[in-house]
Length: 213
Image (cartoon, rainbow, N blue to C red):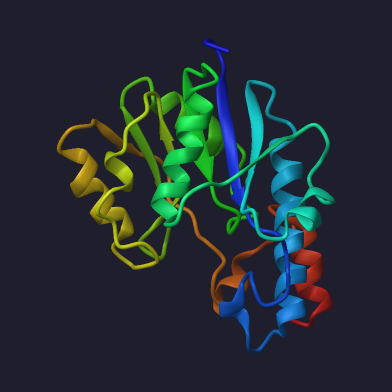
């Protein structure tokens, strides 16, 4: 695997009350979970065309039985380990670098319409940098990539705040070369839902329209 890159999607089981809760109200917990399930379908469809990368699903262990039912069989599944988000992301990188990949890209599951070319952009940017980040509109990042394992991007970060990206740049940038790729958005709030277009995330778009949003 020394000549290949890995892409890992961090995700949860689409269980009501445990995913996309910031969309409630106006959505119900069941509707929010259904929308998140549509997010996952769009993301899996998008990454299925990436022939130059091996695809993994890094699942939160809660509700494991339910998540295994919706992940395509050709995607390798493993479970997240760690308490904080930083610990879980670091362990995903550690697991995949341990398999011998030359580069690892990790994304979340809140951007179902992310352009597929961004994954290749991140891989290409690693030719010039140790750490690559995809800035999100909320002050965090939707993508993180490295070509060697490092704990620096995950230590001392106030997760789920509007300063995650800047904190990461400050913390890791002192020792690692960093490059940013094009910004994109996470879908966390009800006003974000309008950003989803049919061309970028057809399953999510149809679900949204069925809800009358």
